[in-house]
Length: 274
Ligand SMILES: [Zn+2]
Image (tube, rainbow, N blue to C red; front, side, top):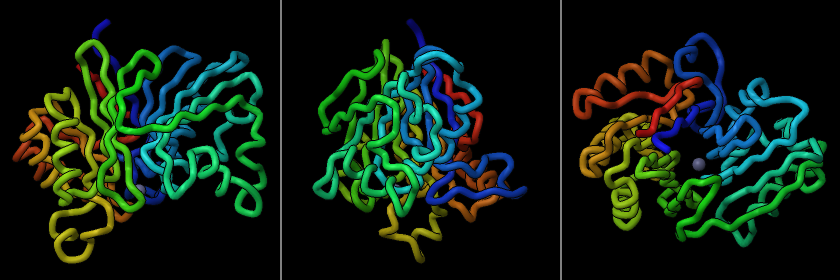
């Protein structure tokens, strides 16, 4: 086997947005997907971008999902209550995530997906569900080796290196630079990767004046990391909800001047890995 494709269905940080200011990059929140087969999908996060799958899945066949959650902030699991395959008894889901706040992933989702916040209780949805705790141990999911690392973000976040046959992508959405141990871990995780997807929510000047400690990073940190890690391609993600298409374009222009193979994630993007 050779390379693989990662589909971007959502790349907006914090909260979904809509309107003509956001047409190029899209307003749906984080969801990356690998199509294992027409009936089997591996997702990294289930932000509102996951809703795009409704039109891409076959009907009348049992479906299988592996959902790797980076963390549980709402923008990364907001599609779950509305995700149609979760309501069919023939479908199977395996959720992967880190225990946090004394809860495993099942309990954590079930606590927010239930009345009175939502009419249906997560545990009561019809699909078969199993749950796997993610630590920093490498794991195998759907034929991919996945290396997780806990990084710096409020309540913690997992970055994932996903690789097969020597081809690799590192997805580091929602990460703040500046904590030495976490920075070193990410540098090592991204070492020599074909693609690095990295949180560039803030402008460097916004970070310095207001947003330090808010859990996100900048394009300037992204290009620096991409160079040091020797990655092939850099993809900026977690676009700020206030950042319109022109604003993201301006970020890409500046980043490309330092690291030419830089792009901004957009809804519908197909990332060729290797
Ligand atoms: Zn977050």
